[in-house]
Length: 104
Image (cartoon, rainbow, N blue to C red; front, side):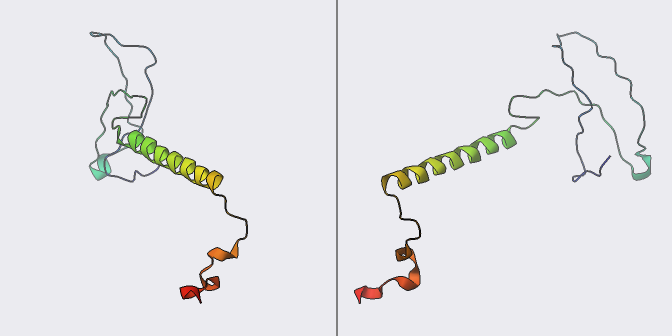
C-alpha cells in the first residue's frame, strides 16, 4: 500500500454490481490487516455512488470536458485558418531579422 498524498483519502475496496433497494441490508466483514494505531489513524467504511463523470465530486470530470472542448475548438480554428489562407512551408518572411523595418 502506497503512502497517500493527502492526509484524508479514500481507497476503493470493491463495487456492488446490483441495484440496492430501500431497506436492503448489507453485511460487511472488516479485517485489520494494516495497523493504524501507531500514528493515531482511523478507518471508516463509506458507501458511495458514482456518476458518469467520476466519483464524489463532479469538478474533475467537468474540468476535463471543458479543457477538451477548448482544445477541440482551437484545433478546428487553426485547421480552418490553414485551409483558408495556407502558409508556404519554410517561408522566411515571418522571421524578425529578415523583415524590412520601416519599409527601407
